Image (cartoon, rainbow, N blue to C red; front, side):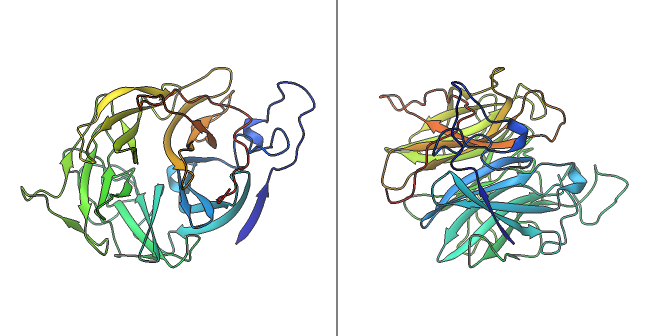
Length: 344
């Protein structure tokens, strides 16, 4: 089901007028997105461009046992968003019983692949399900596939793609990156460990490294979770979240390298709490307008006052670079960003 979510056209009559965080993305000014950019509790957003549309795939932010589906949002201009409801849920991936998290989408050969984490898998992982014991159940990172970004999706392999703790990395928070040579890398990991692997051609498994291992650890300093990688001017940037996701210590840091394999030495923090705007800012992604050097950070944050662990909203603000390629700290705003139709 598609629902237009439009916050375009509200004119701010008073200087400094700001949208209400919990109310969901009223535009401030004539053509601004407002923050949050759409209503509802959503976190861990991945932003991506498919064709002539921007897409955001977030986590539905709720109690673990209520996180049984994923929605998506599309926009022609970063201001007007259409909600695509339940593009993936537990009727499609029945091995997921809770905690469907952090989707990551990529197009390959005209098909769209949606990677996601399910069940908040803990140690030890094993097949089966015990509803009375959340510490011992089956899950991990799965993948779904569709002929369109908004679905309908089907379960690609009928179970987790990664269901085991390699190098002590919890199998969550995956991101898939296509390098310039066509290699598809997966970056993932919670519990303070980040792994990288090479996906095979049909995304059903992995190509071993030369040493026979499926995954190598590339954990940078202070890493907690939420990796995201992009390439700019020949430099690879790895972003990640630090601190605790339930509180105001959550923030985004990054490193730079000459290779997608790293090493990614920590450069610094670029997004963190601002008590005049919001707290708990983290688990981000980045969007580049194709054909330009214009960049946007998509992230979640906690409204002030924050009234619940799962009260997180999705926001977007501009991201700028210094002359030496380092990233300037991202300023969180209530106003959001100006309309930017693709192709302009």
